[in-house]
Length: 618
Ligand code: GTP
Ligand code: MG
Image 1 (cartoon, rainbow, N blue to C red):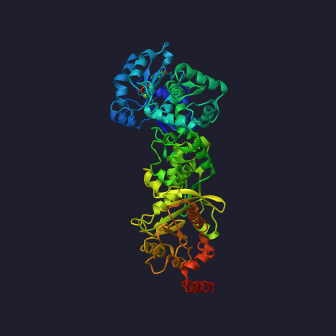
Image 2 (cartoon, rainbow, N blue to C red):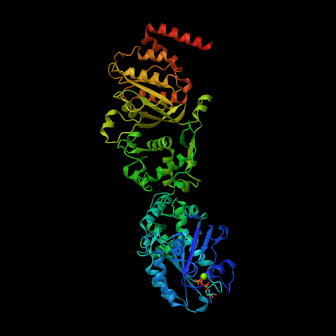
Image 3 (cartoon, rainbow, N blue to C red):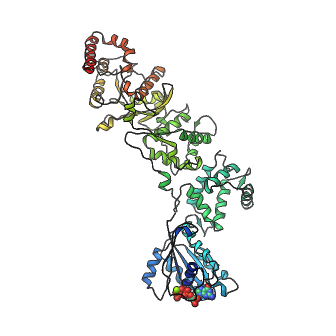
């Protein structure tokens, strides 16, 4: 909405422009007026719409054509004043003044005009008959008003209409030639209808209408008013009322009626509440509310966010199968200007047998967006009308910014519920299969679905009786790990191919380069455990390597088996991410296994480890 309003009065000499301004300001008719009134500014608090308003006079005798043109450019609205007793001043409206103001402007960019018939005290009838054809000819004329500077009739109304024409413009909403709402306005109102239709039955019930009314105007409708509204719609449309509620057509009709009756501010109030600006685009203020996220903090959906998303899911899961079919998903996002989730979602989260997004998968995808790109997430919640539906200040109410990781590490505990694991290994190790197994798909099934690749998968895991989200991110070894920051994550999963003798070398070097000195816990995974294990060319065996670096021993993984052993790997990763200070400490319960594999080497390595412990204590 505009922050101030500039009203310019034009018209033939002696029609009473200066008198009108002086009457408004002085609240009485001035017998003698100067040729041109000084520009006046009415402070915001005394105007009906609470915006500062500048009123500018024009005098042909005092001003050049050049100055006049400059004033027209600056004006937000022009009042063309005529004398109701003087036909010639009416003729000049269409032959001179309107062409002067909007002659060169393209459609949609025209300055709104208000026709003002002054000196109504001198005439008993009305000038409407002559004015109406002009109004029909020029769509930029917002309204007309007859008034008298002499007996102060309609003076404040005139300036109110002018102010309204600027603050609640008709042009973006309504096409006066077609006598219907413009497509952009229909689209915006349809989105508002969908959001307000809480049960998705395509009808606004009394309860839904009341919620809507309360959200937009602050108070519910009186029962009688509700009935009156429906009656008007029912009388004027064939399909506007159904099952005692308002259909989309009924809702659109109602808004058309507001506008046709000069009550645009009603429709504008609704549109602004749902985030639209004067051009019917959604404002950045609405879509991207400020949220400070310091370095080392992450972003998660909180219980309010989850509650909202759960209700949304239930609303659109029409067949109640706890999964969203492609159609249901499209309907859920019908309030977006674009489809926010691409095909890669189907590889990032768990899906049903048919490949539909399950409820858990749906929540996971939201969690992933909130973690990776919180501004995107807030934007999405904005399109869904989060602040209106939940009666919150903004979408930020749905998210939590976690405390800095440094602090978590210091205190050896965390409140976070989302953790990032980077899965690192040479090409062909089976990283993708590992990621897909996490969301319950085995390699064979991945191929059978024609879905886009996602470097992320996300699922829930239970750690210490708490449900946590774990994000797996597959690192492309050819293009990533160029910068030190590429290594950052909550846990690193170093993966090597147990059937490829060259594979472990890579993991060892990545570990030494990026993780050995860091506080990030590492877990080694030996993939393709179903194949025969071969000896790695690396100097030490993977098991020795882990022992030496106080890492838990490598965990075997096979994408062919979908049993619970695989599941424990993911739990271990989440566990390591949650308790980074304990990494390697579960060495003890695997020492038997270690001793078996290490054989004699264990003695020397153990000696070394004991030496290290002593060295540290000193
Ligand atoms: P320019 O500055 O020359 O362009 O004229 P203007 O449009 O500013 O007109 P102005 O206010 O000077 O008024 C012209 C004459 O009309 C004055 O004598 C006013 O007293 C008179 N007048 C203005 N408004 C009214 C009105 O509402 N009723 C009557 N009866 N006379 C009016
Ligand atoms: Mg004047």
